[in-house]
Image (cartoon, rainbow, N blue to C red; front, side):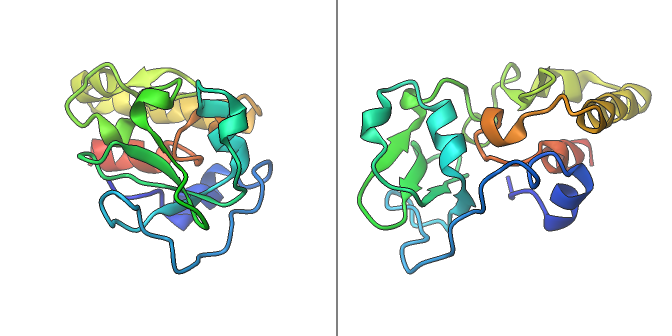
Length: 160
């Protein structure tokens, strides 16, 4: 799955205001396991989602690998440090393409199955519910979503 578009992030507004500024790209912006380009993710996101000792988090610039077949979720930009799916508190949407129970929206608990079985009316209600939650300041995408960004882009791609 592609990462969230800049337009979706701006429309959501939930992450950009609270999340730390993502690190600048470097020559090591590719996943060390699969060589796919990684999306910058804040240190806040990495720390919030790891279920291992935070002493293992020694870098400040991390990237998110969205490749489904790759076990690496986060990797450091300036070292060999990496964290895999088994070290996270949450299942990762991009890493579990066939799992109907994986969250699509980590803040409001919509799953892939919720989206897949929904008709057009229900899908519109899901988007409206998430949008209302964002506007009410009830989301925490920067800490709950492993990709460190709003889920609306993922939802819209899934619904297309």
